[in-house]
Length: 512
Image (cartoon, rainbow, N blue to C red; front, top):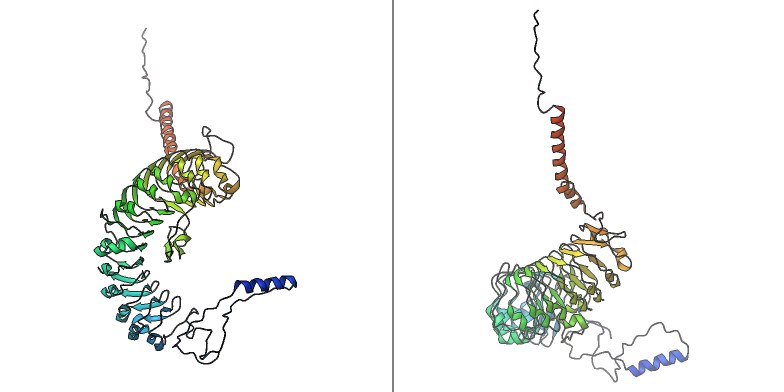
């Protein structure tokens, strides 16, 4: 079991353990009253003699993080090797130097991962000769230049992730040749121009594609609106931060397996379509930071996955790194789609009308963000039905009436904001409400912590900004005008405004 490792291994040994042996061991330990401190069941059950040396550690040590330097040349001469994964290490320099031309010799290679290093340069031509490659992960580097047409030679690709690099130019029109592609991400690059025709019109992709991530590219382009588009198998569509224009496209209504939709931080307009409520598996919807108008469609209260929480997941679950970005706080990185909290985010739009009581049916919803819109009417009591809710933001709108006392039943609620509305009455106390800061309620003239009703005159909870506005507001103007009028009247009465009229004096002479 000792010596120098040979890379020409033809035998793979899989450690296994028979569960009956484990049961017997635990039974003996229990009967004998032994103290069981540790159990290690890494047994291979080898029998007979071995004609070759067996090594228990990977010869290259590539499973250990923070490797750096050069890769051994012998690695790229293994014709039968199927997986090369050097992700999450500290390799630095040009990928053309780190990956020699001999990579083309790895004719059986199916999985190649160079992700999360500090590699730069353009992709080597030897990469495009790997005919059997099914998974290519290059995300999280600084690879630059245009994406070569040679990528179309990899006709067996099922997953392609080149996100978080410095690729630029237009995407090559090669997707008719990538008929097996299921997961494709180019997020956080510098691509420009329109999406390739083959990406949108390939019958194979419309049938097979399950994840499409294009965020932070294609600035100020029109969102594709071809009525013939139909991605039958897509469950994750990620298109934020691209400044896309136009309405929400109709073809999305035919993506029946959609679970995750992020169209935030664009310039989308028009109404939110009513067919959103027909998605049986949709659990994450982010349309924030757009110019959407009209009312919230009532159909959103019928999202089955947010009512029952039963989301049918088809393997493999997409495992791209996706970042949730907000104005405040750090970005959150998720490695799986299902790691995201069930969310409806419609904040920073021009939506109006009521907040539908039926939203309380969404028991599995964790985040409801309606901030910065023009909603009116009361906050429905039924929202207390969202028993899994962790964040509720209704701030900066035109909501009126009282804060429903029933909301104290939301035991998981940790983030609550109703500031800058037209609310009144007593702020609920108890449960999670005792932990919320005054900033959660500021900007509502009629809210108070004491016993009060909406008809009572209350001291408003104002921010510093509003206090300054109040000082120079309408009451101050009226007061100033009244003082001026009184001053003028006093001046007239005292004679300061006009000179006094003096009586004429006459001298009368009397003669005898």
